[in-house]
Length: 307
Image (cartoon, rainbow, N blue to C red):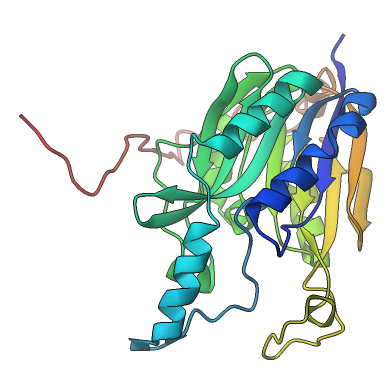
């Protein structure tokens, strides 16, 4: 039986911090279990938060003391991997029987990484992917991942892997993941725009895979009592848009907008061979005699000690 239920949990980071966010995630346990979902994808930067509109006291060429304080607060709200939050999520995976893909802000020394964590019911924390290229001013607060965290793992729903937010626009990263045999592409994001829906449908159609994208949903700055320069205070900071797409680019569920919720769809991995009959991007539709891709998966620590 290759038909499985997969889900995107659309939820936002709590302004009260990671403890409350974790509690909000765990509150979906009964709904996840009742849905029968074998895979649940959660948004980018869910634990730790996506500080949309934050300036971190920085202008080109100098940084203000209040920005350092803002970063210190952000660092404090990030998570250690492994740590108590990952233990709680591993427990959720075990109790519901669902594989989980969860976006977190990960502490690595004094550097923060935008990371997707993979949990399996039998093993707990199974893998992680650090965002290779933070987008725009994200580079101010997040470090770059390396090729050692590009996992594709065998889960009950199928072979799962993917990319975080605008990494999904990197053609060579997509090609590498397709070559690893991704069957269900997981895309944690905070991108709420209509063009994101186009990207998710394109990736499903290009990779001939299922796509599960989970987006955060955040209320307006007015509701949060915040002042975000250049932003309409009545407009939601992040309006969701979680979606599940089939291997020919057809939308199976969503997009869910404007509210939290568990979005589900039935997927049949057996459809992938049929979908790839006329287009296998890393198989019969590739031209290795003309194009080649080399992927360096070695860890790249900034300091190495050789004895």
